[in-house]
Amino acid sequence: MRAICIVLDSVGIGAMPDAAQYGDAGSGTLPNLAEAAGGLHLPTMGRLGLGNIAPIRGVPPAPAPEGGYGKMLELSPGKDTTTGHWEMMGVKLEYPFPVYPQGFPKDWLARYEAAIGRGTLGNYPASGTEIIMQLGDEHVRTGKPIVYTSADSVFQVAAHEEVIPLEELYKMCRIAREMLQPPDMAVGRVIARPFIGTSGAYKRTSHRHDFSLPPSGETVLDVLHARQIPTYGIGKIYDIFAGRGVEPHVTTEGNADGMRKTMAALDTVKHGFIFTNLVDYDMVYGHRRDVAGYKNALEEFDRWLADFLPRLTADDLLILTADHGCDPTFKGSDHTREYPFLLTYQKGRPGRDLGIRQGFWDVAASVARHLQVPFPHGTPFN
Image: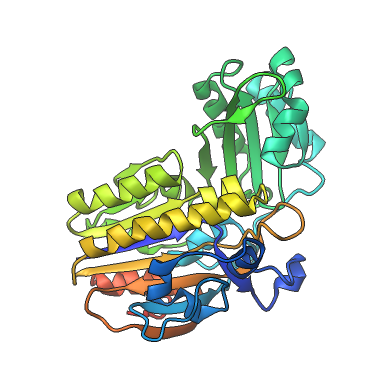
């Protein structure tokens, strides 16, 4: 028995009822992207029922969907990666992670600079690609790391790999992680953001590393681990859960690498949970508001999925979903508070309308039921 969950990071399908509280009324990653791009060609996901969830230009409703189709309401406050993935695995947050729209407090930053033995640059909300263009030259000249945040609960540290070696950058992030703890500054993630290149042509590398808080409650990953059922994490899954319950794991260098490693996992994981995050939709295209790139990445996944589905057996449960939105047609460059799409597939099982799930943790409940372990939260859809 295998459960396979692939998270298309940021592929939302429409604003949630409380989106206006986040400034996100009118957002809708898939529908708005499809309109802006002149339509999406996603025949495989369409066959499963993607076009039955919401109107998506180029993806008509399937007359007889081959999969389960629906969307999920987020119970936790927030719209970030950590919140979405934790709830997906069974942990609902009661309070949002703190954010710092004015940058981190000066007294805290002074303590951080003393701890790493050097000053810093930045300390304001910014796009990662823009801030390295703004401050990259000064960083190279002074050796001071660039620190910044966003609308999410993150403390990000950017450094040129030839100025601050990767291991030193990771050490700086571990120090920040130790200093950003509950109850006062429980920042969701500390993120290492290495880059390379020369003045005017700096480029972030795939050596990003996230240092997350451990989940605040028991996840289905913990339950599986206690029963010696492996969770094979692909991409940034290990980082999001601070390694807890994720064993073994592999990192990826983008969507294509993540898809290759997910396909390869079918040959090595014969029982357990395969949990993949495909990050490029969010990191490379959503935040940069790249409509054409986002469209191409979705269509590339759909082609890959056409090859992936025939390799599944009747004992496999496939779940496709997202963790939040990041509408590339919307204002700003931040995540958007959206329903994630939800598609499921089990060979030989008829398609069905899964409706609006009341909580992302229905994914955890469904994984638990499929792998025959108890889990107290959520309602299975399988």
